[in-house]
Length: 236
Image (cartoon, rainbow, N blue to C red; front, side):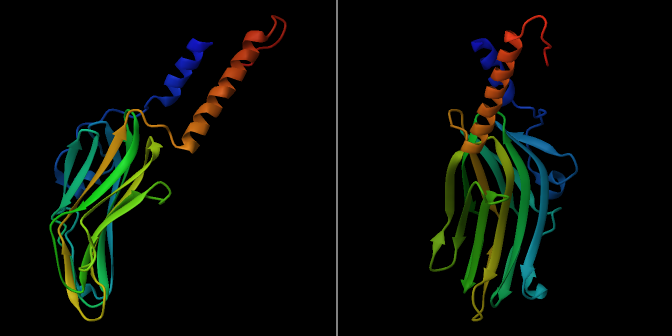
């Protein structure tokens, strides 16, 4: 029975991801191509989607097209992520902003994802201008963190820790704007987002409950089969 439990645990916790090529420095348009996947260390990335939005006058904003924005993979000792550059995201005027988004799926090939961080890249502000960069899971249920420069309040990098998860859909964004009608300008060219893996992390409660509920059900089923007499049917 012990061997059976260990075998089932390995089967349930094993990765079903198809091995992908290492991520390479390329434009966003290549990453968002249908079926594109890549890996940075023990992290598997897929299902990229890029978009943007603005609030205020369209004539006062700039932003690069996905064919011009560059994604560069960044590997770390405990995981990795990406640096976005050449975003050319800016806004001038009063009380307005413009944003660019990058959405993708990430999964740990081994271990569990437990930490995330984001850091501002090249940027400038003037007057009441501001910039920010944020990173979170898409539904905002696991974590959320942001770096920013509002002039009087600056946090150029930020991080978040959370119970270990095998993967999630990620929402990353950058914003340039002006926070008052007094006027100003904000410009951000890019930012860096990173995720870290722990090989010894404890799964978050929902995942752990699902895993062990499945194990208990399998053990109970196995006991029923082993305890049946030759005249009883065995439901396999």
